[in-house]
Picture 1 (tube, rainbow, N blue to C red):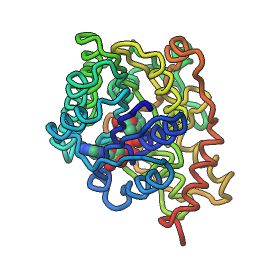
Picture 2 (cartoon, rainbow, N blue to C red; picture 1 turned 180 degrees about the vertical axis):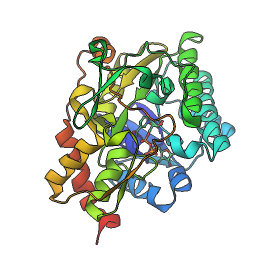
Picture 3 (cartoon, rainbow, N blue to C red; picture 1 turned 45 degrees about the horizontal axis):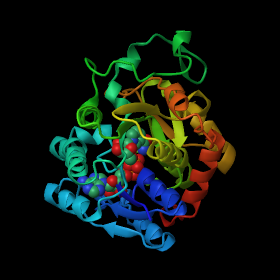
Picture 4 (cartoon, rainbow, N blue to C red; picture 1 turned 135 degrees about the horizontal axis):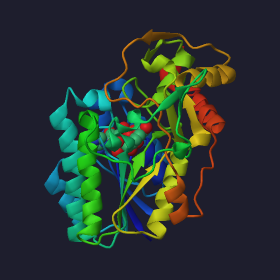
Length: 353
Ligand SMILES: NC(=O)c1ccc[n+]([C@@H]2O[C@H](COP(=O)([O-])OP(=O)(O)OC[C@H]3O[C@@H](n4cnc5c(N)ncnc54)[C@H](O)[C@@H]3O)[C@@H](O)[C@H]2O)c1
């Protein structure tokens, strides 16, 4: 039986990967210490998801380990010698990072290095997939000329119709403290591929979402927006007239790409992974879509100050992923995603009235 080590296993992407690989017959080991609850308070708690995995996956082993614990990571990797590693544990919020720069960098940059080096020592042949972010491009995408449409911003240059490619520059822009720690992680993942010829890749996520997200205002855009709709909580729109565009990908389609890479790995790759143009929406468009599903109008307030370093229009160019892995494509439409998140929140205690 093949062994998979997943960090951040109680989080959105980690838990999806655990479930999908278990269904394919892998033995699953998860690392998570519920740090999300430390970062975001009780509303970010992911224990519910850990317990869900323990119930749903036969033989699932939860390791209560902090990826900043270098010796602990080395020891576990030596003990397990996994056949593949999927690294999703992170401090994921670009807004929060500025108030906790040490915890952010230690988790995102040093935590990744701890795992890479442990893998090099004890599982060098194992494909190593690490979640990166489109914030590695900083606010450089905002330099692209945009045109204002009725409900969204749009690239004015048709050369970007398919979105931002992996060749877009990553330096000399404002990243947020989070984006900078993720750049360090992303470049180190590439380096272990190029320098040590390990089968690594960094996935630069757009908006990754799905029913297993514990969305909070500081992280998890659609999950949080839909939760606000269900509970009648006021949603704050930060700048750009609410026309800022995000491309949304279901965690299942992320997990499917990770499986494609693990089945046929390459060394030191980067991919932009998001929903692409078909799954893009602005905040104003998201308000309309969720109202159509729940029958409730959004309550919102406009704050005339955008988030520092926030993208105005970001769409991931998926062509490199599709060229390298032609069997992969988006299977969950934006409507599917809205419906699933809606139904998940409707069944969770936090949204009970
Ligand atoms: N969700 C998105 O929209 C999005 C977008 C771009 C990139 N990403 C990246 O994808 C990855 C996964 O994101 P997610 O949305 O699943 O996040 P998440 O917060 O839902 O899951 C991360 C998990 O990691 C755990 N964790 C955090 N620090 C840890 C530590 N030091 N030791 C052990 N466990 C720890 C948390 O408790 C949490 O359960 C992250 O690298 C994130 O930066 C996410």
